[in-house]
Image (cartoon, rainbow, N blue to C red; front, side, top):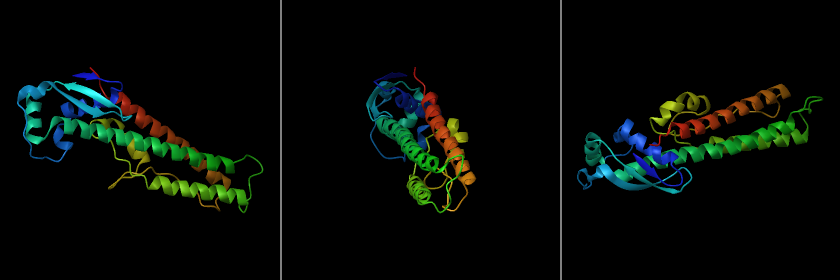
Length: 211
């Protein structure tokens, strides 16, 4: 496999998807006309994790060529995989930024001694801001990465994301009348979530292969 371009990480991941998991999982089958075995050395352009376009020259075994010819256009499949991984990465980046803002709100409330009284107006305003940010992050639907990348991050993904039609980052609730010990525990949990998001992104990058 030969990858060319400024950002090779997701381009390489794209080829891995085709070779290791079978493209049946990537796209809905569609009717099309295909070229013959020359597809084994076809050049395709996909978008990388940063949105840059990357030129890929993919060399596939004959049995993979036959599969691609039955299912769909090669470049469509590569683009679908690259798009998925880019959306996952960018979604995690956006969620991480919100988590950092949530940590700032909690850290403004936390102090060693004496703690702010529960009725303190500044405390209440910061916790209201926290609740607004929690609502914002709960509305972010982040697609999980496609296999086999998901297989490498599943243990991390399930620790921070809910499942269902969309995946959202789980964050602790902090009602306004909770003691400071609860707020400190929530802040530590946010530190853990932030670290897990970073690990997922790093693992996604490290799991792609270049030749």
